[in-house]
Length: 257
Image (cartoon, rainbow, N blue to C red; front, side, top):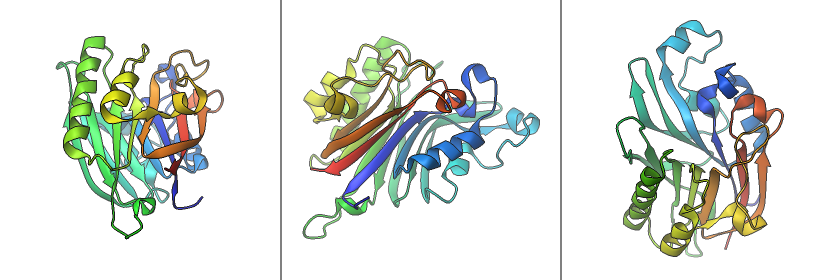
């Protein structure tokens, strides 16, 4: 793949468990992710630590899930801890083949019982070099928004505010994750206020159906881009994906405009 192209994948991994938490699937998950050949992977519901699972589940990874999944394929990774409890924590993660220059997790929780965050990374992507070799980092935000519509609206507003505050207007940008936005109210705001287009809607005319992974009905997961043309998109559902998580994984091939 030419350096000016980029493949990204987003996946809600359900803390490494299959649908209804029947089986631990992190080993199968790692194998399937590697097969996609993505340059940057946006993950939601990543288990950073879980003392009970580590003590009781055979072959539970010693490392945090994001580190186990990255292994030797994605040399860089960042984790945003959102939900913290007595026996562990989980959140969002970004895995990258390219150096992560900076990462920050912003708490956008709308109430105390549903912790949510925006994981923002600046990535030293080779395709971001301009004609004068002036480096412009690629900005990536990994998102998992809340279940309540009012809270989601506030979180979308927080994301817009963060991009306006932290991302230059001419910077290339990818925002991906589980938006829980079945009414697709975020897309219009992102387009009008940030110039973001949804990769599947831009390429296929409609956002992808991604939940549940066995027979996707709801359009919950998204990839939004700015500064890229969308060359190809894919929804990874059915076997073996439906055995790994209750969400389908989404991928997009992007090319510089």
